[in-house]
Length: 247
Ligand SMILES: NC(=O)c1ccc[n+]([C@@H]2O[C@H](COP(=O)([O-])OP(=O)(O)OC[C@H]3O[C@@H](n4cnc5c(N)ncnc54)[C@H](O)[C@@H]3O)[C@@H](O)[C@H]2O)c1
Image 1 (cartoon, rainbow, N blue to C red):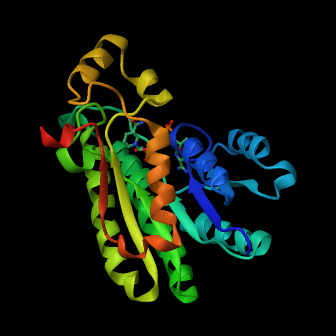
Image 2 (cartoon, helix red, strand yellow; image 1 turned 180 degrees about the vertical axis):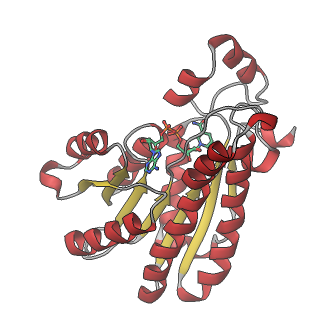
């Protein structure tokens, strides 16, 4: 049987890199799609010798054309694709009353428009094939309004959870599932880079579980949701947040 194929967006670093690596360990061919092509490429080379099982794609998630080109490339290279993980995301913290139109649009584009285009392009392709899995990386911020990430980011992630349900309903009769994962703060570079050490201590103290989340566990959840056996998990939001949503 030929290997299953996954494309992970924002796979050059952080959670996307962990997810890409975990799919590769699970036996998938992995396309690491990112605007940071060189970093994605060096990670792809470290995973798959001779680009047989891993490759990098230059993709800006705000561009529908880029998703279409990526799909064409994977169809040419590996004869198709089975799973899309919409992981790329970004935010700059700005107080809610000070968010400008440009900042709002930029954060919505990267975190929400990306999910729309990814689900449209890959969803239609999966539906035509009668099989496919989409996993959208949302956030606890999309459920509780967030704290350290900004209102535009929280609104975008809330929208990503809603789009997950809309696409799941639309595509379910065609053999396609669409699920979201909503992590709380994880032990990832961006968290350490963007939250000052003292504030991070307070963040961790506020997590009922008492520690930052494990990116590799979130990657395991993504692999689980991507399995052909996962057909009955659909339109769901999988919470992985140390108990923070109980607060
Ligand atoms: N870090 C956390 O604790 C946390 C918590 C909840 C949700 N998330 C979500 O997890 C996902 C990954 O977060 P991370 O912590 O790894 O972030 P990160 O900033 O470390 O990595 C994001 C990746 O996305 C890429 N990217 C940014 N804009 C892009 C674009 N327009 N097109 C293609 N790629 C682009 C970057 O180059 C980078 O490789 C995001 O969706 C984020 O919102 C993260």
